[in-house]
Amino acid sequence: QVQLVESGGGLVQPGGSLRLSCAASGRFFSIDVMGWYRQAPGKERELVAAFTRGGGTNYGDSVKGRFTILRDVARNAVYLRMNRLNTEDTAVYYCNAVYGGLNYWGQGTQVTVSS
Image (cartoon, rainbow, N blue to C red; front, side, top):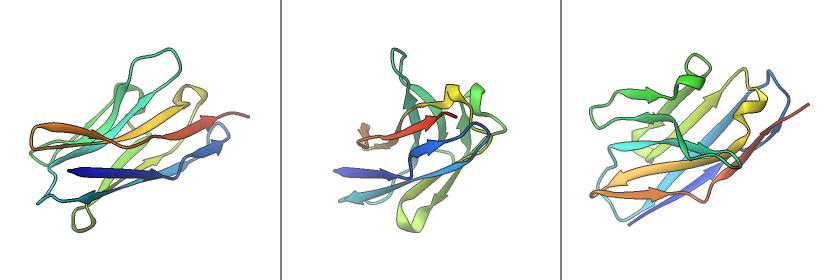
């Protein structure tokens, strides 16, 4: 059982930056796959950035070069550093973890990019 709690969303102007945090808690040994997804109104949930089982990273095409995913293995936490935000980044951002073959999701945190 894995519980995920996100924080760090909010309102930011275009060109600004935000940092999201996600902490995992519960009864587990270690989580290999953690990452971030987002869902904008009327759109499908999409990958933003994630650590893969082999320790690499995947990024969505629209965020490459602007977003960076970081992790703290000891704290079972992942972070998303978002730079040069634009209005198309407005969405609910969800933390994701894969453990024991199951997908776990946080409650989501709203990121709004607007002037």
